[in-house]
Image (cartoon, rainbow, N blue to C red; front, side):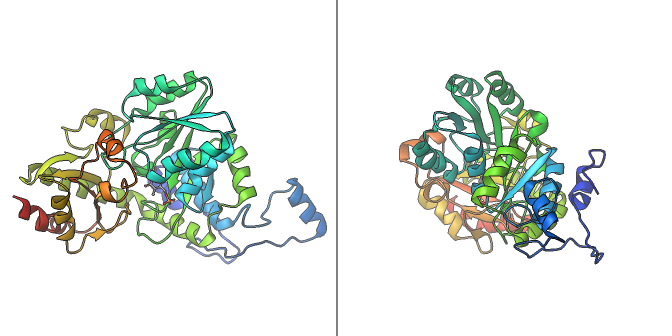
Length: 395
Ligand SMILES: *Cc1c(COP(=O)(O)O)cnc(C)c1O
């Protein structure tokens, strides 16, 4: 079945991209092969020259990876998708595929830590400069643009404070200055937010998170136009090899099938946990876009279908008190990973954001009393009870 925009996203999540072999398998297969054979020397020559389509080598194309790519592209509303070995490989492929020495990038200050390091420690060595701005300050984005700005990069909602950026406004600003808007859509997935429909040019994913959803494999993807993603970004990947493995593609392909129901479950549980935390006497602040008190609640309601599975909160007191909450949980996993069916809990100031200076952390609003929870699919009353084991000690 080919891409079909008349079908709903849940149908496409289950049906789009499927290629059935002559064996008639119902469930999509893992094509565990590094290379592919041709019928003749002439056919091999035609495939290598690009005259005839067809698989040659799994660094270039692989049927399992292609099924995943077609399915995700359809769900995001993009023409083209390239699967990669991790989320960071996807972000790196966008930068290396599209930028050259002398170019400039504007990036939100609160993006994934390794993304900041990619700009500061690696891209800088190749002559690409980056400026960092507040995710929600639209004017600051425009002010940071120079004549060399090639792209704007952000995540929304932000991690761990769940601030929400105005995607349509930032797409307009980018395009007014001949730049591209690139959105890391990891937190929402295409089920909750489709940046390309709001004007973004490229979407990147860490498939490691909600797309897998059960913490089994690392992967990533870039989605966008045939020209950008099918052109320079694909060429970069084909040449340098940050390729998605067929086995992981098979995990993610089947992950997409259940993504809608899982995201609904994450959102429902996260909303209930956020409301409960809001009333808790040991909690001084809750960050969740679904709460009416969230500064961008109205924007999140407009641009997202629902509010996602990530909740963060500040406890009364400081780091010791935040650690008390974490250490008293019985089943919530203490890990910085997120997007899993299993709830996870982390202390951003000493883990995900531990490499920032105290001053940068203050600027970003990541206090020592802040705890982040990726709300999973366990019974919500059990999740609340597990968080309350430590919280009740603080009142
Ligand atoms: C985890 C993550 C990444 C990096 O993905 P990997 O698969 O770990 O390389 C990028 N962006 C966001 C928002 C993430 O949460």
